[in-house]
Image (tube, rainbow, N blue to C red; front, side, top):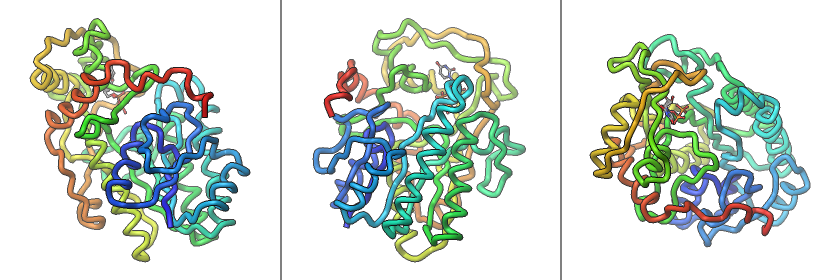
Length: 336
Ligand code: UDP
């Protein structure tokens, strides 16, 4: 019996694989290395190089391996890119889910845990955001993920495939042992960009907008540690295996930090100056995004270990300091 982690070479997927392996689970990874890294995948996991839109590729995995549950991270996730290239997102994200669910149905795999996003809520009407709040995405990325949630709901009704959709807020940090971390090319997220400035690889941080309706004028976001996120996925698998109904949960800390506060925290953690300047707003950024995450705590029994952004940043810093070139594997995808 094994768990299939689709997208297990990516930032969040690789931390999930590490956690599953630590817990003694058999893990199979499927990844096309479009944005992931082969070196990020724990050596105990079995690796299949390929694309989940490729039905023959999925058939090979489901035929060779005794898969009982799928955890699905194989998707693109950059909001500004999705605005410029919407069809890329509907093809890979939404299209990939069609093939995956069809294969799961044909092979009798009944459980899927899915990485959804706060971006499915769009501009929230109130804060913190609850799972029952309206989902009205304002960008193709958020819509591609909402469509995937809805496809799973219909696949549940028709085929009895049970799902848990985990709606992430802002994920950051790295494995505390410093072995794996975040390495995107190009990097767009706040915490790794701040780390790059601290390392001296980038001249300064541009803070996108200081005239938002927030206490210090900069956007407020809810940061959750990547290992806490991985634990929530493991609890979600257990929740489904226990025979529970399909469900959706927010994963956040319920506490918001502004971009300026994140910068200050990073200066304290790293002891570096981290030069920063104000820059124009980035299109599509809501003022604040903070999760109500009591449902995951109550129903799944989720107990995040990192409730201080300083600790989250400290793990990110450990990875960046010890891996200045990230995984140092640009162009190696074709080797697999
Ligand atoms: N941000 C910023 N400068 C950067 C990158 C991000 O000011 O170089 C801001 C961004 O506008 C947002 C917050 O940091 O307010 C978090 O952005 P990120 O892209 O990390 O995550 P998102 O909230 O888009 O999922």
